Image 1 (cartoon, rainbow, N blue to C red):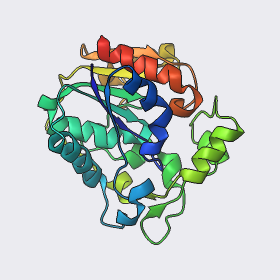
Image 2: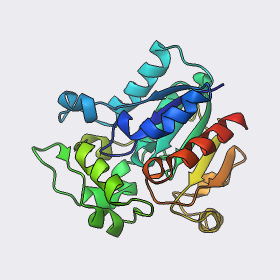
Image 3: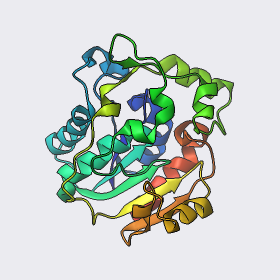
Image 4: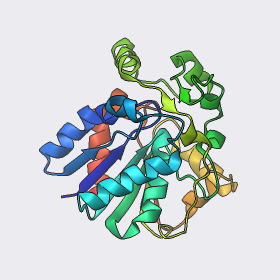
Length: 242
């Protein structure tokens, strides 16, 4: 059995993984869905001091304090920054890094560079970035496939403002996690398109052509934990068993 640490994307908390965590736990896995500082039930901890390194520290602290080993570290969407950083800090505890409709954040890059649609939103109180409308998210390239009225209402009701500092602090990596096994689970990009971008040397995709990478496809929108939760759990279990 595996130890999953599930990291959500922008505006979401551990609650986003409820319907994915349940079947994984039923199968005997240890599952730790994460709420990062300043979000969901930890919204009161937010402030201008919260940056990407804060979220990296959240994950490394969880893994070390709970003495988790052989961890399958899962990043959805904007969770890529915290997950990439945490894998670099504690690679000896990580068995595999999984990017769910996401990807590794390169050394020196910021989440704002990968998510220009998010940073077009006005910042409130100098540090809070509200969730855009679904129309704005779609215009920014986030597929809404599989999100019906109930799923959209659930997300909107529970979403909290993202600490803007997490988008603008460059990630600093040592390279310690470069050789860890990694998996891309592409949901809103067909794998043929991903492979074309890798072959073309696209700066955000080129590294996915390395021997440490497996490429998988789960056709749905950008939020598979809401649009296809059972399939998401099955894919994660299969990746962990591989």
